[in-house]
Image (tube, rainbow over all chains, first blue to last red):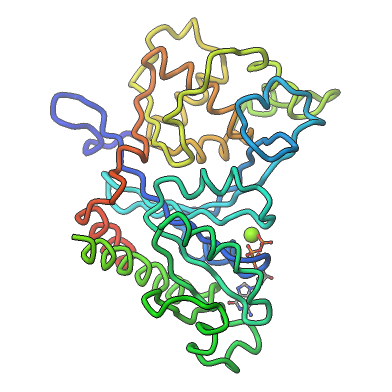
Length: 197
Length: 123
Ligand SMILES: Nc1nc2c(ncn2[C@@H]2O[C@H](COP(=O)(O)OP(=O)(O)OP(=O)(O)O)[C@@H](O)[C@H]2O)c(=O)[nH]1
Ligand SMILES: [Mg+2]
């Protein structure tokens, strides 16, 4: 479908600016659920081929498939305008595919790190990853059974994250709740930008 | 997507054989600007349709509206690296135009963030 507004004066094709947010967190913390809740399209699924060492794809095509492994990604899309499109990528369940994490984080405006209070430690690697790269992130505590037993500040202390990092409660299954999480993240990214100026 | 099974699936050998066969042995490096969210848009018509494989044509059809590399891979149901090889061909030929996220400055533009914020609030 080629719409009128998709062409610039002079006939040059308009190509939107892509913006990316990463939904990270430990195994089973609700990453895919959150992507599903806010995506405008049924969430898409794709795979990347990696060598067994987990590094690089450039040489993969020369190898027999038994020497490669696939890492699955699911993602959603929110069309902001004809000029801007936002993508939400869930990180793969297994943390060992760091090559994929680098690609996921590349150019991202920020990350939501989902946390399950029953398994706080499963989200530690995600926190470390985004802290080290200086990518803005917020913590979203997903409200599984039992989450209400914890105070936000208790969770913050247990995760050992700075008070400058927003920490919000959410229900990843709920669209409005997931939207609120994204809004918090974008505001946090903007605040950080203002603080640097 | 009509025809997808025809060209990606080989009854006997399994679904990966065809894409592997298509791109195997290529020495030309993948275009470095092909990231997950890089936007791809097809030119109104290919420069030389006879020179394109059916796989290229399917990408041209899909990308009549702008799509990300990841979306193209998902819709064609092939691994990302395979789509990147095919897209590298099309970029080389001038049949698609792209916009990659590294064109977004290291520190994202405040106006862009504001647009995203307003957009997310509005959904
Ligand atoms: N009670 C409750 N259950 C949830 C919530 N979010 C997700 N779930 C459930 O938790 C399970 C895991 O959710 P997923 O979205 O698949 O989690 P994930 O982080 O993508 O999991 P992996 O990709 O395997 O790491 C699913 O059965 C969800 O239905 C929530 O907010 N509350
Ligand atoms: Mg998942």
